Length: 267
Image 1 (tube, rainbow, N blue to C red):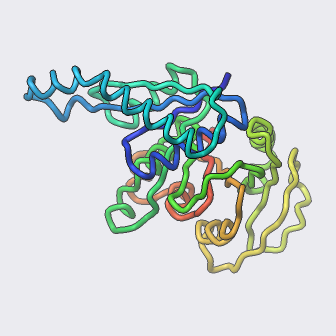
Image 2 (spheres, helix red, strand yellow):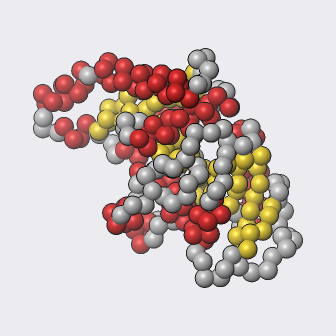
């Protein structure tokens, strides 16, 4: 059985991600884990407060369980769906804590909510979800705040001809796991017939003005789509490159209004 990990911070974004994970679990027969990461470094030098935090474990677990039951009832999901809660007390950073838990539990996917790019700080440093995507260590399904809970029916795969030849089978496997239709598309401003691109999944060409950045094309492409998710491939970049430039996938995660599935691949 596949495991979906949902990091919970009790925000509206986390609740939206939990809704998506529960619906996806119902669709795929997976299990959902509500993961709450508690950073103990925040209580360094405060032993009494640290002790209180550690003693609140049962209350914290109860809060997570109540949240799961509340969302299951609100979505009208079958009572038999499998879910569990997990608390992690760590001195590692937030992202490493999630990645470590993902590998330890042999999970399939991390589902996280985004809050969009709303200000200068977000544009410079990004959201937790965008930063996790940028690490390119685990598959991430990013859920935007505008998304309305719905069953996924189609996976639209953003590719170049090289990517569809190299990673098309991977995209097809994810489409099969989601139990939905899978279609690849290539956005280009140049004439392209699709010849020479060996694609294991259907490939369509989407024309674009030359002056338009790809991430803007993707945002425009996704407008008005329902019951769909966008799949993009992401690979790890150098620390210096991360500082000077956001990846296209990270930019798109903060701007589109449909779920984004970011899959780590090798260059």
